[in-house]
Structure formats: C-alpha cells, structure tokens
Length: 172
Image (cartoon, rainbow, N blue to C red; front, side, top):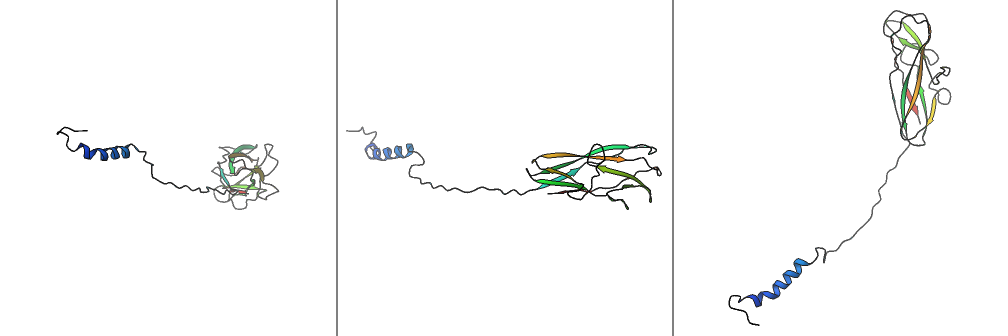
C-alpha cells in the first residue's frame, strides 16, 4: 500500500502504535504477582470488676426521736459469670465498728447509724465474705445494689454536720 507524501512515517510507526495501544488497553494486574498470608487476632479476657458508689444523705433532721431511713446505691460491673462479694467497712469515724457505725461531728460528738443489705433493715452489711456481704454474679453490664441506711432514735447531740466515709470493697 502506498501512502501519500503527507504521511511518510506512517509505515514505520504503525507497528509501534499497535504495541502501544495494546499496552494501554491491558489490565493493570497483567504480569503482576500477588501473595497472601493469614494472621491470628486474639484477646484474652480475665475476670474483672469495677465498683462505684453514690453518697448516702440522711438529710436535715431535728431531734432524733424516730428512725431516719434513706437508701443509696452501689454500681457493680463484673465480667459475665464472674462471682463477686461486696463488703462495706465500719467507716472512718473513731470508735465506729460494723455493729455500731458512727458519724462524726464537731469534737467528740457522734451520731449512730447502720447500713443494711435488706429492705427490712435486719441484715447488717459488713465486710466478712460469706457472712455479711452481698453476693452476686457478673452480667458484663452495671448492676445496682441498694444500701439501706438507718439513723435510729438516740440522744441528739449538738447541731452540726455529721459525716463518715465508708469504703465499699468488691472481691471477685
């Protein structure tokens, strides 16, 4: 075939253009190699628990001539199926015991109170595992435990604010 003089190089470029067009239209992966591997993903969970508490406030009272009852709650979160025990200590007031908890006021003034595990306020909540603690089994989500407080009738000391700090301990 003869080409007009306007295209003198076409016969020489034709094979190169065909190769170039073939390369441009070939898939990108043509001639590429791949290799794969796998790896293990793991996580080891151990039994664990956390605990938090809300304040117990008996409010503002006058003469302590009748029971003053209030409640508060503890929030316990333990691993699913993990058994636990929650205990409460006697508090920080000097002379306070599990059997006779005290709130401290000014000087040596105190007010007696108690913390219970039951609504009837007959089971004192202490910190001896297996005796006077609250037991449960973790669900993996927060569980609320109610603390039942009572200030019984007693000789009323001087006016003021009476406090103690109780430590809640979770054993699991």
